[in-house]
Amino acid sequence: MRTLLFLHIPKAGGTALWGVLSNRFAADRCLDTYYGRRPSDEELNTAGFVTGHVSMSVLDRFERAPLSVTVLREPIERALSVYSFFRELDEPPLGWPGLERYDAMLDLAKRHPLERFIELAPELAEHYLGNWQSRALGAKRLDRAEERLEDALEGLGRCDFVGLAERQDESVDRLTRLLGWAPLTPLPRVNVTPTRVREEEISDQAREALRELTAVDRQLYDEAVRRFDQGTAHAISPGIEDAALVSDLRFDRPMRGSGWLGRERIGNEPYVCWIGNGAQARVELASDPAAGSIEIEIPHVIDPAILETLRIRVGGRELAPSFAEAGGAVVASAPLGRRGRGRDRALQVELSVDHATRPCDVDPQSGDNRELAIAVRRVALV
Image 1 (cartoon, rainbow, N blue to C red):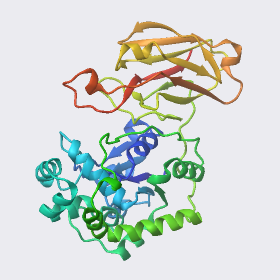
Image 2: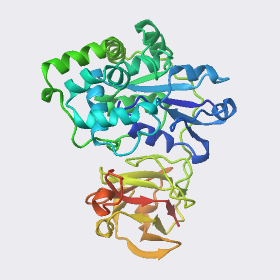
Image 3: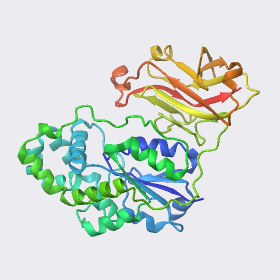
Image 4: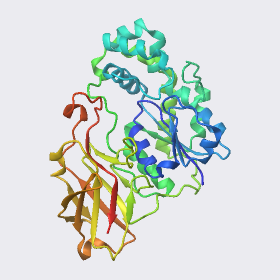
């Protein structure tokens, strides 16, 4: 089976897409290259899904060309997002090449407005705020400013699909149609910097400096937009199947659905997916006419009050759940009734809550500033 490769460009809006794409594969078929990890050629060529902050040079390590996907972002918006990200950061940005620069970047970004930061640290500004997208697509080393437009455009042509951060849902819907998969949208909002510096808030001098720093990325991005508007994309050949439908879904397995954050695990516990700030998510199960009820295992809840607002819809019909504790989790169960069992091959299960909250607001010792609600490890027709 062909590998799906997602070249994740930092702060280009790719974290949510990484999550929903990886969820379509079994956990043991996913390989990430974050944390500066360099996998072996064997690992690359046996994985179903590969991702990381890597350049196009990784394509040359595959025995069979992977299906390569990336997302680009308007260059000044990406630069401002990076700068804002470091101003809020307390821990190293995992997976970013060149972490030896981290301490200086963090210190200067926190202490200086953008214009002054660029003036004091031109090399850091060039590295983090500059033409990173062109470096990545041009198969260049990400820790050096060696970008050339012709190399970046060549890399753009090697990508099977290039989405646009500013048109996220449209991009993802187009990708899933090309793949022949069930919908991935709506995507949750992930890795959003709350105190984001906006372009209208910076000085004219800072804006001009960013234009100079991102000049190559601007030409690359404009060409990507032109191709996107024209519908220009490689013909994606079959070879990457969608997640198979099952009636008993454990979240370490391939999952059809949307609205979930990327799967994770705590220690040796089973894998879970969180419902995030969208406050709703769905999965598709294989319909089972003999099933009498549905069970949802919830091992973690950010705030117990959120669980009281849980609503479950199966096949478009809202059910009334009851709650019990079993196996270290809260189990929400509800009778399906005849309509809830479904006659179609796929049965839609929708979960929603009233709100999400940040772990750091519940526990001041937590450094997790994601908006989370409940974590689910299993959804099953019983």
